Image (cartoon, rainbow, N blue to C red; front, side, top):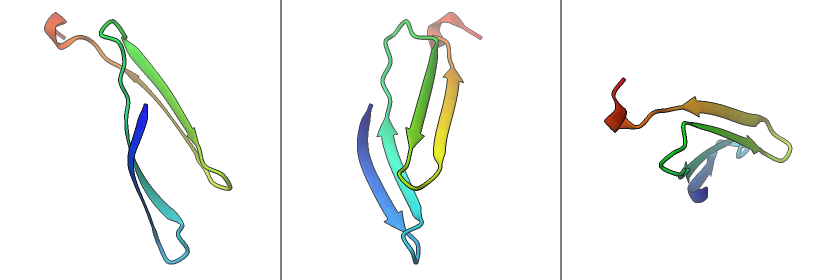
Length: 56
């Protein structure tokens, strides 16, 4: 994972936009990520995917 860009905005700097790149091995079939922000909320995401060459 690499954080490539972030922007903080809002009158009280209460909003953040974070751009990250997640890279997985070619054999991976799922990904789980979690982010925690100091004095803020957390974000979790689970994704499953398949190789485009294998069909749906």
